[in-house]
Length: 328
Image (tube, rainbow, N blue to C red):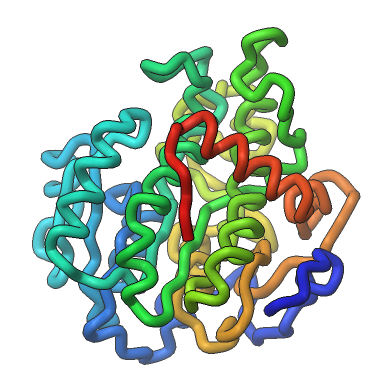
């Protein structure tokens, strides 16, 4: 997809999939034997469901985890899954993981940036960077940069960044991305990081296309997982996700509110489906390419999250903040 016009790119394919489609249905019997995937956050929630789907189709799936013991408890017994150590807020840990993977000489066919945090209290990494930006975007930017030789080696690879409809809550503040001059607001920080995930896919695809590496951003829908652990009871009640016993559950399912199996479907679709061959740099939801929208809390992606100029600004800023030049 060489057209860099976001209006042209963000045109649904009418894929035949939708909000009730599951990851297993997206696979449709596809054989991924011989494919190697890395799924960050692959031992809980959407990431875990994505790992199960890819492994069930024969892929070898590496799951890097901050707490390997917790990951082992979730993933033990799933054939084809390998556990590794990785802390996305620690640049040294990212480099060490990538070095170990590259030393094995394996290609990397699928890289899914699924790990993330949401609406956290004020937190910063060792560099002083705001935690949601550091975890959700900068850590994944550095990981993709370090793994680039293996992505090229695959002779056709896909990178999937998990974004969110939360990007509609606010854009990217290029003047103060780390909340050093403005007051910290946790939802604004989340929106900024999810906007960054979408912009990364635009800039990454522009660079990767000639090497057969395509990039996508995926909105999985609203799913109640441990990602919601920082949400207040009032916030959960506001989306009808708290029952009378104080349990975090959804009462109804629609185009936005989904089961974990349904939420993982768009991630898997972006990662493996032939409908996206020759395409990239797009924001997807409900198993299809999303439309552009300017209406809040509606299906679709805001233009500012798939804008080429902002994608390039973010790429330059990300290289500066990480100190990692992404040479393709």
